[in-house]
Length: 437
View 1 (cartoon, rainbow, N blue to C red):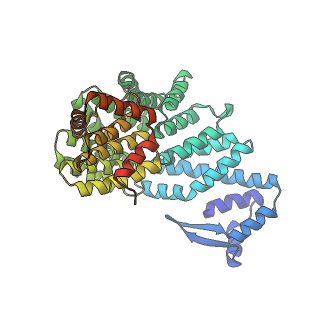
View 2: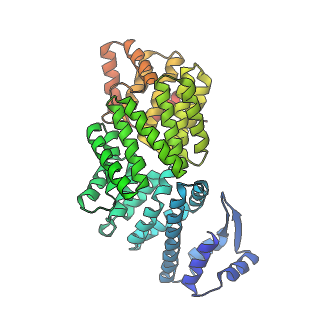
View 3: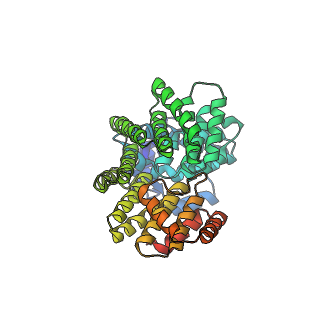
């Protein structure tokens, strides 16, 4: 933990204690040591000391609970600050600090769930939600949020946080249901984000018309309320629904508008995301040079601390490589993208890696049945997805594979994919083609 954490705990044990002096004494005698992390110096109690305290506690349980509650409160305050910093120039530092504190968050939420402190644990998770999403830890956050949920944690803020985690984790039905709960409360707070989340979940499951209605409502309310997060999500959902409906000029317009908003906000995560989507649009035009430029800029902006955006940029650049006939480069990018997709666990991203794997298999001369199987497994991960990919480069390969098969064989492969299709099956198929390092 950092010095402010030590100070908060010391004050819980001994009010007005000189935490710095006490900490210095512990460091001097070797009970506590300093350790470098990604961002700053933290303090760690030696393992044997921790083990001794567990077996022979020096504090009563009530005192320990007071310390844990104090630390959880201090972390909640810092998570709120780091979440605000996330969209700006300090975003990299905020993510690094959160990475150092995540294990403590998990431990304290487990304690809070069992010690009747669910409200405090929920508040910490709400504050940490933007950080969990940006760090590619939405599944972890959603699992924790589910574990602490109770009747006292169903306020608008906690419902929206859980919906955001659910959407980012690919639990679209849960995200839609939680957003509807917020909209059903009849309050103005959070309405824009609730519409954006419900629209995003609906679009992800094929309900593009309803998704577009929600997205329009989100944009209108967000602009009126000055809600940046809801605005950029609403613009994104509007673009997705336009693309599903074949209105590609509108899709580009929405994303160019989003690009201007996120640039002005100096939001690195959403800047990388928007640049990558513009790369995908350029690839469809087709303009491989522009797609490569957009994709490479997205990869640089994402860096190594924004795994969602890095994964997507790698996928797009792998598609560019395949269009250019650079098979070896595509293979390496797909390998890296799949590792990130597997770690994050977002189903749509795993499915997209599967489609690119199908194109790679086609470029390597694989049988049409194997190429179609990869496309079919990807489709099985996306309820309501179109029969063929909407992206031109992917669709051409999918059509070529299907044309090389008899109708009965195509139907057999499709039925098999629907029966066994899940993220594990898709990942196994990708790994057979592109083994992990």
